[in-house]
Image (cartoon, rainbow, N blue to C red):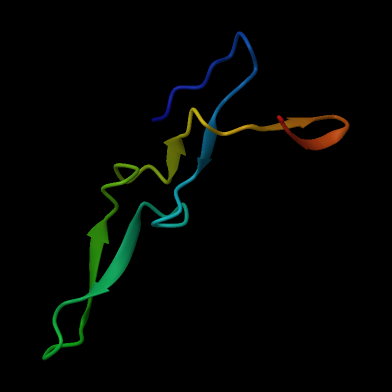
Length: 68
């Protein structure tokens, strides 16, 4: 599980762009055998979320803001 910073209320968590939050995705086995094969996502370690320290979007009660 991805650690969230509770003290500062800033969690640089975002949905994994590779598996789109599922934790897995499908790939074709080969050109000769186009059978879908389900594989675990190595980018997020099958959690569906990644910790992005460069994420500069803050969500407050006033809406969504991007740091500049």
